Image 1 (cartoon, rainbow, N blue to C red):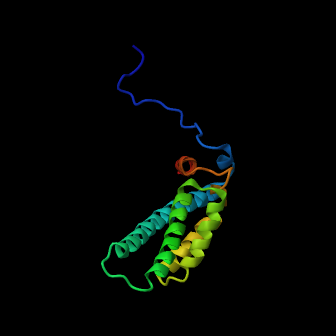
Image 2 (cartoon, rainbow, N blue to C red):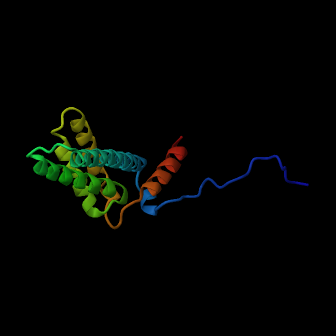
Length: 157
């Protein structure tokens, strides 16, 4: 018997998964794209929390016994903001071409909300500007970027 049954399994670590275009980039570019993709997903989660908060803010006055005269206008603004937040949540994960511009617009609007909105807006603007290749028809998927980044990071060590 020539094979040791207790030996660890052998594998080929030279296998490259993911698009070849990601492998043609430098490690620094892939790392930047990885961080942008992770930040955009985190922004999508925050937008989702905002959508849930807006939904609660709209539903609570509708089922309340007392009504104020300015309620329809305020609810209209809340519904508009909630719709934008819901669209930003969806586009942060599906990443159509127009989703990048929606995200940039919402990040610009967040700059007014001092201090946390400003931090989120600046971080979001950086992520959306650096993540140009993550949106549109020829986009890189988040899982592809993560796989290539982890493999290249492991190879670098």
